Length: 339
Image (cartoon, helix red, strand yellow):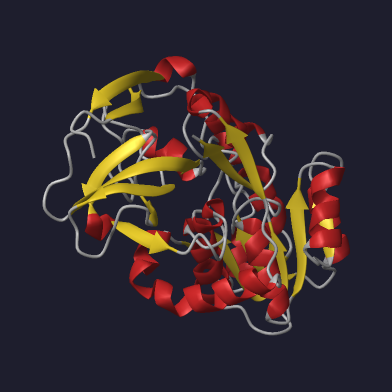
């Protein structure tokens, strides 16, 4: 590797107020040092866009430190090793890791994972076999305590996590209905993913639709949305139900704080009446257990038994514009930026 490898980088220069804007970031070019002992240099090819990124930009207590002002925006990515001083990696290896929103990265070899790009496309390794896939697996099986015969409702069901949650639940013998926005996304759930039903939150009364699909109530609600969608699900729980809080994308860009009065869970007493539980989780708590999920997920994906959809935008300069699609409902499937 040449010593003057240049990396174009999106740096956070202002905490967003509402939806992230172009002015919240600065596009810079930095000259990177050659990798030192134990490090690798990676040419980034794909950047993962995930709802959690909005929380990473915000100040305040969370499960992880916020991105510092002036720092490269945190992001998962996939690329090719262009130089290595780590014994486990060679030039040409394909890798994934928390590389950030930049075109090149130099980082410890212990912080990247080698993947087989001859087996599956690189975006799959930051999608169905990356954080979203592991989130789906541990969220529905571990936190949701899924059992055969359960009646499961999934919000943001056509998204990167929700689509996998529903398919895993179906494979384990559950009845699954997904909530999504628009006829196209709802048809995808039933026609391509095998969900038992779909609810279009844009055109249907969600509370009434849930009751129609599940007249005897829900065993599991896997929530990626929060707000009034969560409220509707809480009104339709069965005794012993589990509510899994994976995300709350309807709340992330609220300027009056997450969980404002208009979106507060007013139906929370349903948890008491139904002796149900509501539990949030962070996938970082399960990193040491990925080996439990990865082989089965990989087998299903390679065989075609588990469908996944990547929504790939192109052009590094379009990072902010692509990121915004997550919070406006424009993306369809796992959102990825091709550098």
